[in-house]
Image (tube, rainbow, N blue to C red; front, side):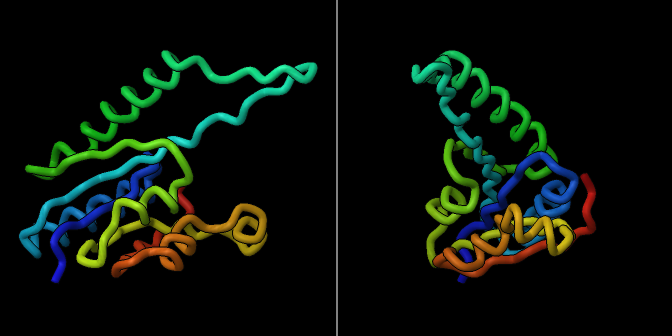
Length: 142
């Protein structure tokens, strides 16, 4: 039995479609909808062998901006909550899931070369998730 629907949102048109599908599932099942965005930490720069780490205030601003944007995206879904984390998208989504979660992700129609070069967050989520995963198939939107 599903106790919540967790959807990954990267602010693409494809993830908007996944959010709509997740909201529909949550409403039909009578369970909470949780939207999650994962920020990827910037790589440290190494000019002349000195490590320059990102400014903590800048990181906090990025997180606040992502949270505000995500809260705007879930407004059409009463009672929805949001989570913003730093890390790898697939790993962080999976870490939030439990066996009673329905995890929803978008899969954009990438070419074979793009999949080989960049991999697929959706495929990684399916491989690692401790729960059922709904992959919302979309055409390459952006």
